[in-house]
Image 1: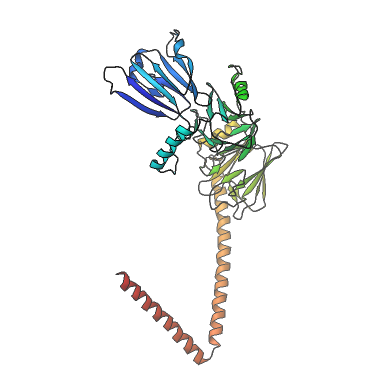
Image 2 (image 1 turned 30 degrees about the horizontal axis):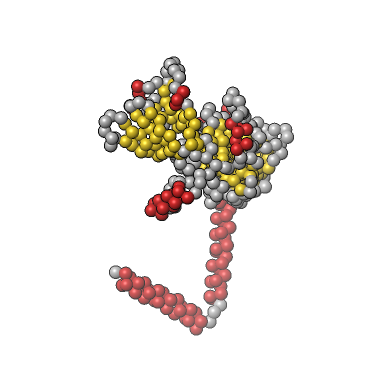
Length: 441
């Protein structure tokens, strides 16, 4: 995070602007790709890239917009906390700020102002632990162990990565007892450790690389030695892209976390409303442990229902303890309420499901037997409902009959007492209702 003071040299000293940049990596210039666009810089043929380093340090580097790569060595430098950069017609003062010097979500503004001022003058800027983000351009974000950092594309994230493969709120990272931990927040393209997609909170040692999406990696460091080791790697070495593993589970619903999970060989994946589930479905009609999914050694996928109401799919309903084996047959499971989960065996399956926007019939939309299957499903449900209704009606008639027989067996005096008691109850209820109405109106 940075504060910028932009001074325009047009003779008017009052013409200046101050802005807050909530990024660790950004560009100043007049081009369309610049994050901070200044029209007065159209005369120069480069943008200036500002990149955060450890602690309050940052570096600047000119990014040329034309073929003219004339040396601007004085612009490529490293600074500690503050620098003023002169572009000729405009000068920009850059001040690095700590991420905890920002208004918290539930904080009252006036109290936040007092806290930020006190902290800025009395607490030293954090240096370690830190996160190194490796992509087209590496940058570093230092943070305090007491405040985990949020990684993603959204404006609220402490570590912002502008890439389509990164979710708005992709993951959260913290540091406890000498170790880092990471929690994937249900990202679309996942978080990978040693090529295996993680879900939930996972502890990692300092210096271990994690892949976000397909082409970005983050490394937690807790010392200057480990930081130098990470940053001194060859610039030609880019993070190994995470290979999309199949088969995988995929959902387009906002209440499914994570939205994408590669199935581990011989590993059991639990799906349900329980927070400990490998795939959490945050809908009240979903059972706490709804179903379990296993990738077998022969490449087939087995789905076992554990729910009360069953799990729908294109052939009907998978009932409690029933097992469905899928052999390279992509299938969408319908949990109700527009909540679906697809088993995809190829990249084409994944594209088909996403293109259908999570339709339960994504892989069987053109199936001529779809209407027949639908009719069978509906007739099955209707039959179950009919049986339930008949049983309920018979039980109700039996209970009414028993009450009538008891009443007829009573003596005449007891019958009169019961009748007068019933009328008395009705009269009392009418009096109470009239009193409440009078008080209200």
